[in-house]
Image (cartoon, rainbow, N blue to C red; front, side, top):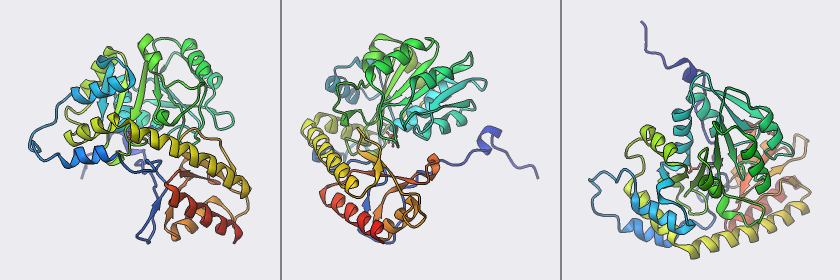
Length: 362
Ligand SMILES: Cc1ncc(COP(=O)(O)O)c(C=O)c1O
């Protein structure tokens, strides 16, 4: 009679379902998940093809080779790098390792949805700090701090808005928060950002013990399917995260591909310049279509649709899916009249804009 029940904090939650869209068309153009526009580095694919031995063996628990490759690439301290099964896993284990059920964790209004999900799964209380003009706001974050605050999540740049807060604001936030609060600085899109006002958070980690920077191989490096992310933090934080992380959560294939990808600077540079070039093109085309959008430093754009029902974002998502183009509706973020579109390859971008135009002309 009495079936086992999940914890009350889990039972009341919805499963996090990133809605990448559906279409009956086979040859899909998928611009709904902020994945790399140019696919994957050929060097990473070659490394994966060579992965034919020791498949029966467990992967290394720590992943020294990949950690060294990351440390070399970005001039970082090896001892502060932790690998994860995607940065999603790191977000989860941070909340599990640091949040008691009586704690609060702050996240920003249109911040990445995994933050509130992970906070709730950990059984703690999520507190929203309002954005200003779709951008995280330091004063609003600071105003939410109280004695119960344990964590602050900041995606900089943020998904789905594409906006970022400048270096001085990040430093002001860090300086103004008590040092017993952990700042989780999610820099998933940092490699795309070409702006002197931006910091990826690594210098904060080098100088302070209450910051963790998160990075991913899913975006610039095009390795989303392998699930590979990394964090940069104090050895104290790292040691405690390793107690929670599955001992073998990062697999050997992902590590091999990750090393090849991070060393393939040519592919990275090509991807960044492709993104910048097509971002400027998207901006121009969207203006011609009279659509509002947030200026984005990432590899995606948040587009606002007119308020009339016919031309709504939700109808656009359906219309585009029928043409085989997947974009991301923003209902889950409480933004029903917006959609998010990733920068694709040249052909995909041109087809997307052409179909968007024909939708608006309807
Ligand atoms: C801000 C942000 N953080 C983290 C992630 C998750 O990345 P990963 O694929 O490494 O789990 C995403 C993916 O969309 C993201 O946008």
